[in-house]
Image 1 (cartoon, rainbow, N blue to C red):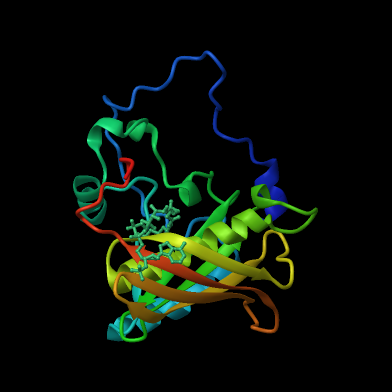
Image 2: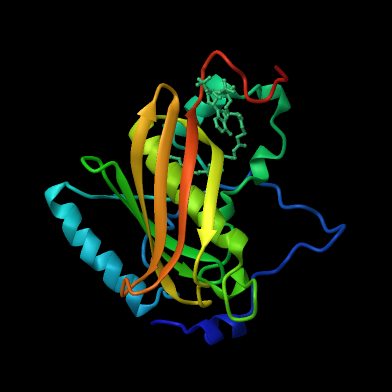
Length: 231
Ligand SMILES: CCCCCCCCCC(=O)SCCNC(=O)CCNC(=O)[C@H](O)C(C)(C)COP(=O)(O)OP(=O)(O)OC[C@H]1O[C@@H](n2cnc3c(N)ncnc32)[C@H](O)[C@@H]1OP(=O)(O)O
């Protein structure tokens, strides 16, 4: 059953931690990883339609749906930790969650990404929830930037390997109405050594409105340099 934006706002949230309340111990809990890039009841008809349309395009192998989890347990992230992070400096890892997946269903970012390897392109279908408000009735610019960074970052990492954002330059052209669905289209434009240049735009589902455009520079990480140590 689909829930409207207003219905989502009426839904009581999960219990929130009080200051001073005992923290949950994660060590004894079995963590069940839910793939967040699959439909849930908060998804609107528009998001479902785009999802179904692209799942069909996955059948011939040209597009691939990218699963997405609150926590990183993938080989990629293990590689990231082993090669680039000084383990003695990592703090709060047991509580860490991917920012874009840290909201209750429907209240924040609901999205699915699809990757086309031949085109070095990632499409993100995004439904922006009511807790992402900036100007009244519209999405916060930081929330838009977050999803442009995530989409271009996914494109860079899929196409070029583990990389981090060095520069993200955004033009906000038209505001995005809260609770709407938009399409973020990103593409690897150029590779120069460790530099990956990726561009993207955010459009309405009917493609009539160009909401934002960005160009991003990602730098492939160098295994000989630790990210956490001063150099
Ligand atoms: C599959 C998983 C998908 C996950 C998607 C999530 C996406 C989210 C991505 C992020 O949000 S990452 C978080 C935000 N980014 C950061 O915190 C990165 C902070 N910056 C750094 O750690 C370092 O600056 C960085 C790793 C990006 C680069 O440091 P390095 O020491 O490896 O590179 P170096 O400084 O040697 O520069 C390499 C080249 O890039 C150039 N460069 C670096 N930063 C630049 C910059 N900002 N603008 C222009 N050029 C830049 C630099 O001039 C040089 O050019 P040349 O080779 O031609 O000399």
